[in-house]
Amino acid sequence: MTQPSPNPRPLRPLPAFIFMSRWLQLPLYLGLILAQCVYVFHFWVELKDLIGAALGNEAALQHIFAAVAVPGAPVPDKLNETTIMLVVLGLIDVVMISNLLIMVIIGGYETFVSRLDLDGHPDQPEWLSHVNASVLKTKLAMAIVGISSIHLLKTFINANAYEIKVLVAQTVIHVVFLLSALAIAYTDRITSVTHQESKSH
Image (cartoon, rainbow, N blue to C red; front, top):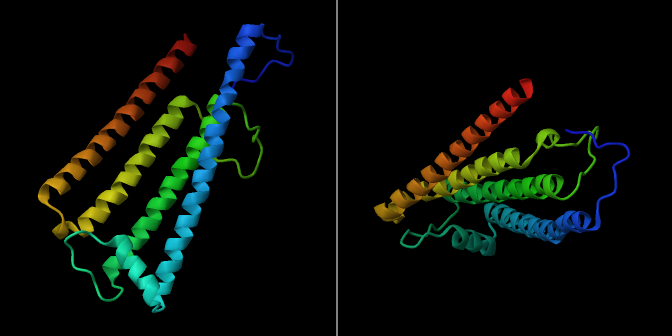
């Protein structure tokens, strides 16, 4: 990271005003933190119902069946391996989206608003030490691919309940996400190599 000069010269009024406009993004990141709270609450509600269903709670069992129900698929009369797998995949999906939110909140704030001054902090995320707009974009793309993989797996578990065109469409969408992530990563690599070569000359 580039170290700031010890005595930076003051900005002229117009550049200072334009530079201050970055703080308009702060409410957006605070809103994402609230969205994170909603996901945490949703996670615990689903986990509580799963545990309740495993212990024989009928209300929790019905809520689980409603959450994983697929139109056209038979509704099981008891908690089985497939239902548990679908619920757990849903929980993993929530965790991955939560990870995506954390990357956007922390990485976006560090990149576009202001430094967090976490250097030397024992809990500083490894990726934050070299974060920039390009790295953040690549990590977000890979996170979206992971989320898409979870959704595709949930569909394939109940493949008999879906029409073939739905399965093909979801597979094609996932492949597009994957190719997009690879293209972003490849572009980032080319940019990094070009930047290093320009610095060496």
